[in-house]
Amino acid sequence: MMSLIMGGAFAVAIGVVLLVMKEKGKSVAPTLQPEQATADLLLASATRVPSPEQTEGARTAEERTSATDDLVTPKAFRVALEIPQKSVDSSALLLLTAVAFMALQLGSAKVTDVVVLMGVIFFHELGHYAAMRIFGYRDVKIFFLPLFGGATSGKREEAPAWQRALVSLMGPLPGLVLGVALILAGGQFEVAGQQMLLINAFNLLPFEPLDGGHFMAEVVFSRWRRLELVFAAVGLLALVALSITGQMWLLMGLSMMRLVGLYARGKLIQNAEELRERWSGWPARLADASDEMLRDALERTRGAFESEADAGKRALQAVSAVSALHERILMKAPGVAIALGLLFLYGAAWFIALVGV
Image (cartoon, rainbow, N blue to C red; front, side, top):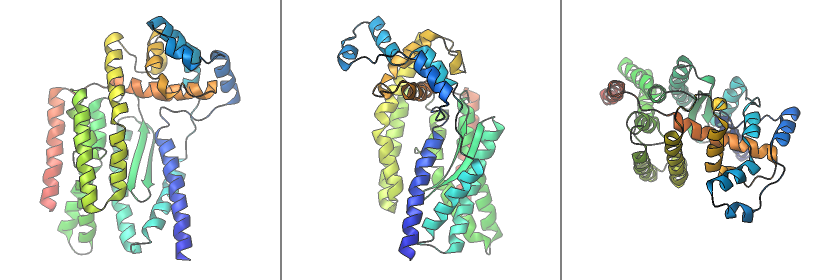
């Protein structure tokens, strides 16, 4: 009976993870396709898809631009960009993921231990949630990641680097403060305080995809984006080693997947730098970009959508790829004074963690 329950819970967990992955990408990948909007996409898109021979045969910049227009025109792109996005109800998402998380944890832990763990994770995510809401993020959601932890998602295209850094820091920092307070209170609160301290200190490590790694990328490596890849690779390798030592296989798998994705990330950084230099004054809203800007961005990201035969789906995939590129283009490093202040906060968070130890 227990194996049946665990099997069902695992199936739910897989579904939840897939849902979460789709949900986290919604800011750049619209999923709702109304009939009229789809018709507009088909009308706006070229009806002919170039053959591989035609595409490979394009040599000049004009020919390459023409080949891209055969795939997705700026007009089709703008139509796809305006399609309303399907959003999962935040309460339902939180409840579903919490149930799946608890069901899988109960197979190897006591109910009280699972409740404490979920409370620690939820408090951590509340810090991210509060920071996102303060900085004007839209559609902010908290959810659990079964067998792994938790996450908070939100949308804001033009968020500056210092705000993104604070969003990352505001997960571990409040948790560390509360953890130390619970440990000092002693008694029945001490165990919860120790867990709060451990989880938040671990997330503060300067390794991606942990909060500390995202923080350092925004504060330090937003000035030298090419060094970002070196920093990410070293951090991910360190996480792989740490995961093997601590037998944290899910974290190891996630770290290795991100290692594999570093090549694509490098291409994204390179394209963003070249487009930033070529076209001055990129607008905060992608819809306000000129047709020439969009054609250039579409050409550089065509690998993400050129294999899709359906014109409507191809335009939606193009929106996802170009939006990610646009977000990179808008990234600006924080000023020196702000960066030093943020690094002071990061150091203060580590000081609090060491006090608790």
